[in-house]
Amino acid sequence: MIFDYNVIWDAMPLYLGGLVTTLKLLAFSLFFGLLAALPLGLMRVSKQPIVNGAAWLYTYVIRGTPMLVQLFLIYYGLAQFDAVRESFLWPLLSSATFCACLAFAINTSAYTAEIIAGSLKATPNGEIEAAKAMGMSRYKLYRRILLPSALRRALPQYSNEVIMMLQTTSLASIVTLIDITGAARTVNAQFYLPFEAYITAGAFYLCLTFILVRLFKLAERRWLSYLAPRKH
Image (cartoon, rainbow, N blue to C red; front, side, top):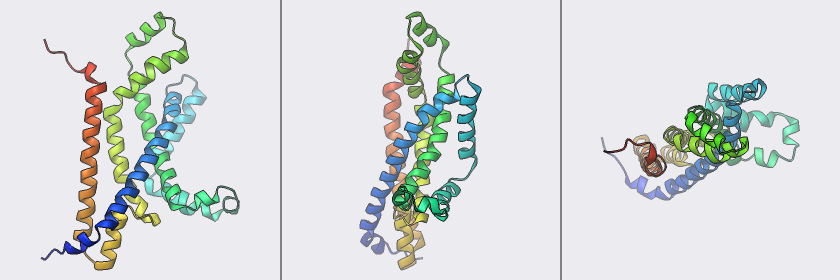
């Protein structure tokens, strides 16, 4: 078996362009997904049945359906409705980049909301009682104590979600975007070198995963050091 990596080297600008697209998709999806996940996480720990139930239903539906189905519904499904095509949102909804970011953000918001809700529920009672003893209002309690503490403790679980979202961005190539996987598909289609094309894409994802894992390890070392066992 002969491997031809000269073609891959010549196609490196295409892969680098795909890398930029992947990073953009990941950044926008995580940013807007986290913005949506914060209120959803708070709703999930609410004692109001309607509020809690609405958030539960949202996360259940999103987590219970495949990401690919959600992407197809947004990118292909909405286009069949005349009201959507005639609305002011059509320029956005006809964009593959916007639809991919929207689908990814919706998906990660559901998982992240459950992560945040779990961390909020795991908050030690001592922290809550101390805040109440200082006369903090419910708003200040969440803003100064509960949310910062929960977000710090959620870092290990959230790092897994970020890695999963990185892998999920590979679905963007199905809706015509040239991300890392899209670059590999293009090279394979042009030269029929599936092994070289996809092993190169895999190497890019592996490097990105390594970088993200190291960044989260540094973040955990900084913000979760107080949870580490003390040495005597």
